[in-house]
Length: 462
Image (cartoon, rainbow, N blue to C red):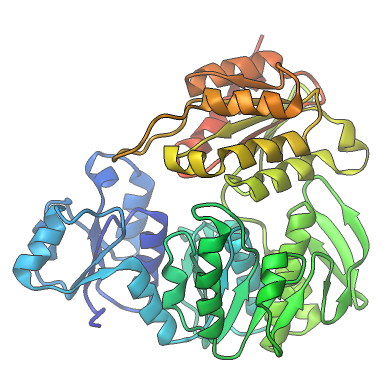
């Protein structure tokens, strides 16, 4: 696979941009295109790519001359002019996941898999290994705040050490392409696929891991995958012992482990479990507990993972990537269950994405909301986000809201509005001092901006 002069079709996407940067950092002559850039969007990414030496071209096939291969994602159709041009030039067309698998083969790789928590644990583990002196490399699916502060895009880093940390995605089945030195399975939950479809993928991933697999002992499906020699972690413990003196805060968590003090800059029981996974990874490669603590203290989260947008009139606004039942429940329980804050009222906005995913897990989503929230809390939904393509649109957010009200047995619990702007207006009018307002969802690239507009509406209301 000649990666000296790769061309990325759809380079602005999260997965593609990470791979493009990683190769550019290693000295490859990287170029690429993206429809959003052709439309004049994402000017910050355009400037960033130019700053690290990535050449950009229109997505019309003209940029492939002199390139060694074309990298595509599933979103790039066979009719795309660059795919057609690559065929005419007899250039290899390589799927994004195959490129990542090739890069993983070239390094000692730690592949983090699971339905939920991959980006967080990958980021935490990166900091743990970095604090341990390993100078690791990173290819991940979300932007780390600490790397953004270094002037990077945030989802890739090429270190000089031997270890590479990656996310292994089950949603498209690509995790079976990886044969890492060390594998991690965080959980096995219904999201893009039913659990019965996922289990064989995780079994194959497990069996292809060279050294051992680290698994979540609190997840029944994970625990069932463990073999002799594999390593289990739990929400409050690893091989070094159990977390003691746990202090839960709105924006962080403190605990002691084997006499070493730890501070996390992220809240919630699920993030304590994520930290235990990162500690288990670090200990497996020889990082001391003290260095694990320094690394986790340096981790400051990733974009749209329980981000504090602001406070106004006694109202707190949060943005969160939560988009499947487990993630939504974890987000809401984190807000509700912090000491005396258990009585705080939550106004939760959920942005459904994709008609097929909502048919698959819509009922489970609304049940997770009903389980996590009280009758005084509220759920708001705009219509399902549609990214294009063929879809069976015989489900609506209105159906999900009806199911939420039925699950809670309260007609005012859930509220449907056709547009995002109507949701903003309704929530800004409803919120009162002491409330926490959280916007949850994925896939829609406008959700980060939505949270900012939501906060502005709350702040500027009459």
